Image (cartoon, rainbow, N blue to C red; front, side, top):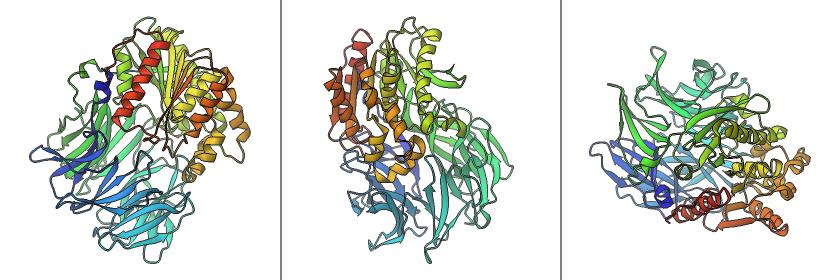
Length: 598
């Protein structure tokens, strides 16, 4: 039964394929993510890439005749670029240096060149390069002693727009002149802020961007490249972020999405009338990857707790919303899927913290608290096979967005920074109290699980609030911030230090809160998973904790996937991991076992 949940496919990252009346997307139909194509005219779907490992993204040229496909190896996130040509769909290696990371920076307007960054010079430095697609001639055009990502070429093909992170959440944007290699800053003089989803007007003189400069939430702003410091605010909401914008081909409309408590609203902003409205008929869920086929036809990806992911279309002529692919259908189990209830609780200091609650809401029901990673992430209204399976088999599942989560403004996301770290862990204790007092769950049967930073939250909860939990599952989690920062990729260390604290100034705090240093307080069984090729959280984080707990005679089990990285991609590993998790929670939260097919 569990395998039926895990084998559910989905489609995501839709992109219109220029000049072809087609939309590409990524799906695991073959077991690993590949590019697929949906034909607008015939509604037929065909596989568009067939590569030996997972596809991370696809980047179409302006004409649609060529596509760069980014893949990595065994989950190591070291993206390499292959070139796929329309004529024969044959892929050839284009940018490959398997020991290094590559970030795509766009096609030149005449599609003769691509831009990218790579850390070939030094592990923590990402230099900007230009590659001639035909001659394979490569030139480093700008060296950066830090991280950076090209966003796009300018319309004249003579400049690159580059994003450089300033903190864990904030960026600065720059323009690089490719002739004289001079760099100048966009939006100069404005306070530190988030910038994302930049859109250029057809005239090449102006554009639109999402930013929270001088405010708490991301909103739509217009700017002129020559006087970019003068940002004109077009649309902002006091409580919620606008997450994505996409300019229509004729530049008359901005499609946008608003994130309201983990649920998307799809909107249209008329640039002529300077008015906006929301599209009705879009199912409640998460909208991503807006892409225009023409001035009246918009495509997007949609996920929800009961919709694993498909491509949808809206026609602005008649405001009709239509699902065009049905990859996420699973007739055997989809009738069992549940929509969660969006709840809140008041934490120790009065902060209102939201969470999604799945389950039958029965009295004395066992509960699994599911903690997201990031920490600058957010549990959204999306399909999660393990949550759905647990909810269908006697568990309640609570998925909180504790302080420090994205989606609720700048102030909220910074409430757990550095030495405020344990306030977010305290939120988990108060969540457990709320589940018992408000929803009647069994206080003796509360489990907790989380991935990545969520794994740290699990370990911190087990060590600092040991009496609350009956079992814990840590997936690629951090057991000590000092060893994590010392061993994580050099390109990530500086940005992670803005969130967690620095090796120079905060080691005393790391020692104070480290789960590894408080492992003697863990009272309950712990199940740990990690990928051998994880470049974000090294496998040593799991190994050192497991060894320590075994020396103490504690109940701990570590499972390492030799062919995975930070994410778990291969279906056989998904089945093994989640079968183990469900059986573990059934055993220690004392739920009658169900037959788990694999």
